[in-house]
Amino acid sequence: MNLLADITASQQADVTSAVLFYVFAVMSAASALGVVLSRNIVRTAVCLLFTLVGVGGLYFLLNAEFLAAVQLVVYAGGTLILIIFGVMLTSKSPFSRFEPKLVEVIIALSINLVLLIALVAGIWSTQFRKQAFEGGQYPMDKLGQALLGDFLVPFELASVLLLAVMIGAAYLAKGRRREEGESTPAVGGTSMSRRAREWS
Amino acid sequence: MAIGLNHFLILGAFLFVCGIATMMLKRNAIGILMGVELVLNAANVNLVAFNRYAHGGSTGSPLLTGQVFAVFVIVLAAAEAAVALAIFLNFYNNFSTIDVERAQNLKG
Image (cartoon, rainbow over all chains, first blue to last red):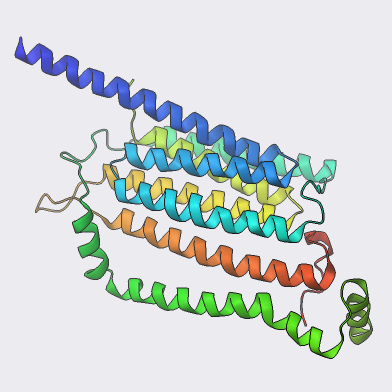
């Protein structure tokens, strides 16, 4: 009786995780398709947001709670906001659109279809391990010890890289404009034509 | 039907292909950046799924290598997005467009 209850409980857990997997997978896959197909850059950004949230849910299903939180905070909260700011700062109207040519669409779709079919065929024909890691909890303290123990050098390299990126991004986004503003107060088309004269 | 490693890998492959298609089809530079983010997310799904199905060494403690790599990928993606957006802003200030077809003289 007890064994039967155990079996049904494990089956219920299986069904629950399968349903959750399909919910998150369909959500992220459909929004990834929306990223490809949408012609509007703002809609593309919103679709990307749903893809990132779905992938975060998949991390929860894979018992990677810390990574799911990092995905939601850093990706969906930080990188996507950065991208949306970029969209707002670089478009004259937020609904500007650039259409690809029909030939480009056909070439891209055929290449990607072949790639997808090859990848899926390769994955289906491979025998992977059926059983997930037993007692698969990945505690956060173990992850912190790994980051500051075995992976100390890449960790410090990443911090140096972030510092360099911060300085470089500030320089790139700001430095050139101020220099131009000092030499010629012209903006837009005139500064562009001045550049064209310099190059020719 | 129980969810196995295959399902996660196929989802990762689909996200990867969507990212490549986005990079090919968008002419807006920020759209291309979004394609890169999709590809990185696909790689992350694969890393974490393989990490879940990898059995640890003799001690029985869980392997964390895949998750640590995923954390590094997220950090690098954030850094890459910041630098790319700075370049796009600079490009937009000089040419007042973000169309990559017209970014032929980015040098200088």
